[in-house]
Length: 275
Image 1 (cartoon, one colour):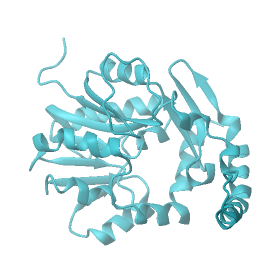
Image 2 (tube, rainbow, N blue to C red):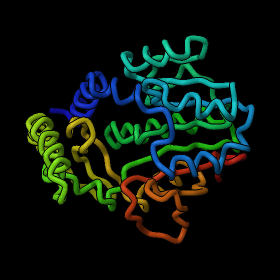
Image 3 (cartoon, helix red, strand yellow):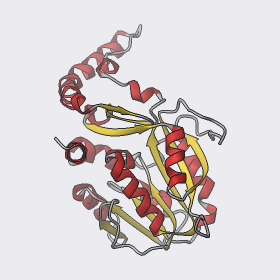
């Protein structure tokens, strides 16, 4: 089976599940301190400027980004999730669109182009490049691109079925609840993990592996800090800042690695083309 077809088919099935709809509609704030810190880093320069929000799902990021600007455009490639967002925000420009081809949007326009919640990890590596090229195209010269990505050097890369086993506690009621929850989730998670494990691949700088989210229902790219910086620079971006998800602290430019489960990258499109 073609790897790109595998990632698209598997991940679209997860995004269209009841679990995803329930989770994405429930989420209403920043997913982690790093996301909040990254946005605060760029919010003021983007105030009242055109913003593009990629992978909006059910609309979690809409009110967060619109605190900075009402000139807002959102897109998502999962029609079911997008309808939830349109129901909640009927007067906004929300489009059914794949980030690999945003030809319906103008070039050199947006002050900020964002792709939150590690959404860029859900396609293969070649299409990841297409997305970043499209993000570069639609961003105005001097504008900012911001996205998050799973870190191959983080603890999340080691997730396996054993993570579902109930943690020991001296409180018997709590342990009983954890055991019941494990018994409820383990069959589906085990099935998904076994089905997706055949697609696991390791390459220099990145890997493809099933992730724990949605009962191990998604197959994603994990990249290293160094590789993601290299990729951005190769496409013409200037990497300005990186934040770790867990503590929201900045990962400085001399760092070669990080143990954060995922990282938030802020990169700038130069005012003038890089010679």
